Image 1 (cartoon, rainbow, N blue to C red):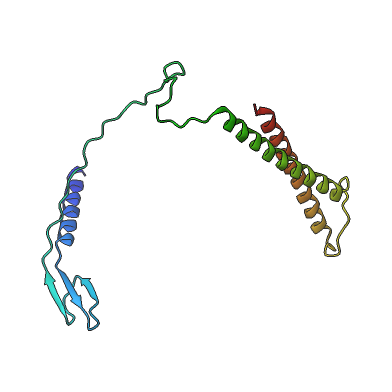
Image 2: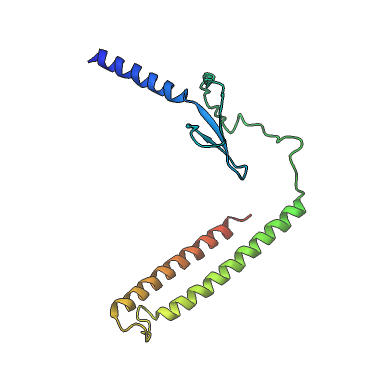
Length: 165
């Protein structure tokens, strides 16, 4: 069994090498288009000699251990070329961020109020295109999902605003 595997392996390697060593022809048609082929039977083809395939092994990889730094081991001073922002600029940025978050929250709260009004405590009005009761139920389920998603957005915005300095 072991011998037959070795013979099979040797034959596979020899076949692969033989296929890799086939002749290559460069064919040029009447329009000047170049094409590489493994047969030179067509007109305008000439055999070209290509260098053999060179296999260079990859360099051995040395496994590096990840270096973990604790909070105490990290340098307290950033690099000297690290950009610094003065306090007034940072306060202006923080105020802009707060205003953007407040605007987003106001929009989400208005959307939530509109969705709840349309939802009508779980009994929204049926539309003319909802003759099938299943379509109505699908729309009601979609409305519930929209309300839940908008409530989560409002809550997330409130948390974000509360975390501001």
